[in-house]
Length: 83
Image 1: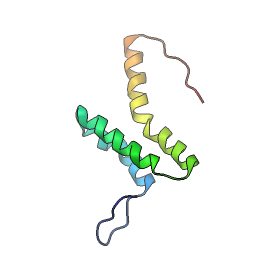
Image 2: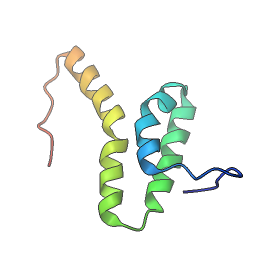
Image 3: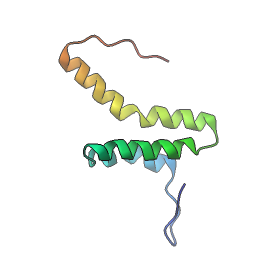
Image 4: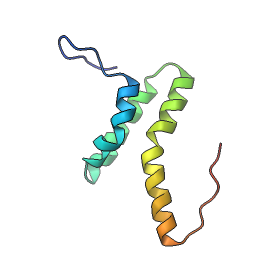
């Protein structure tokens, strides 16, 4: 990944994906957009397309679940998930 602090290994994708929800939750308004954009660029830099796909699915779990929750509370029917 990006830069490592002196004497430390860079963060792995598994570490990052485990901490996405808490990191995003601490952001407000425009910061959320900037945060997701930055992670999107990091995923884009991944050269293995299978890993990219897995990361995108994992990365989008939080916003997708939020949208499903809002949709359920509003009473609208949601379309079935694509596979």
